[in-house]
Image (cartoon, rainbow, N blue to C red; front, side, top):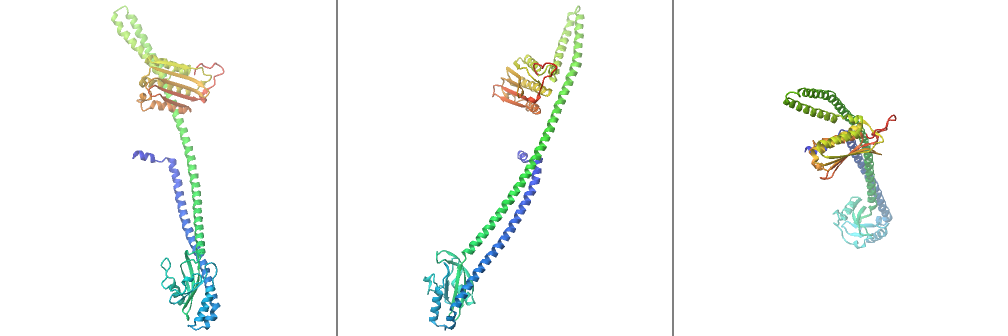
Length: 471
C-alpha cells in the first residue's frame, strides 16, 4: 500500500497543473451539457414546427381536393334522391376517374363499411371492410366512417402503397354524403414529410456533434496550453533547483577539501613535527645509554620503531586527506604515487600508464579524478580479491579519462560496500563536472571504472613556463 501511495503521490508541479486543468474541464463539461440541452430543445421545437407546417400544408391540400371533387359533382348529388342508383353510379364513376400523381385517388365507403370506389385497388370494390386495422392495430375504415359522420376531418394510419405494396404513413381527409350514407375522401402518403423531418433532425444532430467537436478541440487546446505552461514552469523550476543543488553540492565538496587540507597541514606541521622531535630525543638517549646496560636500549629501540610507524601513518593520513604532490606536480605523479603505495601495502600487482598532457586539468577535475581513483583502489583492496590492477590516465579531444580496472570478483563481490555510497560519490563528482562515470562489470572477471571529464576542464599551459608532463 505504501508503494502504491508513493507511486500515486503527485509532485508540486503536477498539483498545480491539476489545479488549473480540473476546473477548466469541469467548466467546459458544464458548458457542453448546457449547450447540448439547449440545442436539443431548440432542435425539437424547430423540427416539430417544421413537421406541423408540412402536415398542415398536406391537410389543406387534401381538403381542397375533396372540396373541388364535391363541387364537381354536387349538381348530381344535390338533385338526386337518396335511392337514386343512377346518380350514385354516375358520381362513383366520376370519383373513380379522379386519380392524381403516382398514388393519389378518391375512395368511397358506405356507412356499413363496404368499399364502393377504389380506383387503384379495384379488388376492394363491393367488399366490406368494417373492423379493418393497420399493422399497428389502429382502426382504419370504421374510423374514417366515424369521422365522416361527425362532419368530416382527418385520420392518419399505415397503408400499403398501391405502386409498391410497401406500408407507409398516410394522412386522409374524409367527408360525408349523408343522404346517400357515403364517406368520401382522399389521402396522401407523407413519406416526404417524414424524410424531411428526419433530414432536419439528422442535420441538427450533426450540428450538435460539430459543436461538441469544436468544444472538445477548444478544451484540448486549452488543456495543452495549461500542460505546456505547467511543463515549462516545472522544467524551469527544476533547472533552477538543479543549479542550486549543484552549487550546494560543490560548496560541500569545496568545504570537505578545505577541511581535509587544513587537517593535513595540521598533521604535517604539528603532530608530525612533534613525533620527529620525540624520535630524535629517544635516539639521543639510546646513544648515551649505549656504554651502560645493554638492556636499557631495548625499550628505547621499540619506542623509536613505534614512533617511526606513527610518523609513517600520520604522513599516510596526511597524503590521503590532501596529497601535497597533487598540488605541486599534478594529477599524474599523484596517481602514480598512490598506485605505488597501494601495491606496496597490499602486495597486489599494479600498472599505471599515462601520457603527456598538452593542457592542464583544473583543480576541480584533478581532485575529482584523484578521489575516484582513491575510492576505486579502496574498494578493490576490501572486496575485489584481485591480483592485478591497472590504472590509466590520458587526455583526448573530448577531455581526459581515468580508467581503473581489476581482475577480481566483479561487482557482485563488491556489493557489500556501504550501500553503494562510494559509487554514488564518484557519480556525483562527475555530474558536478558535467562528465560521465561508466561502470563495466565483467561477471566474475573483474570490474572497470571509467571516469571522463569534458574538455572545458582542461586549462591551457602557462606561457611563462613549460607545461608539466602530467596533470
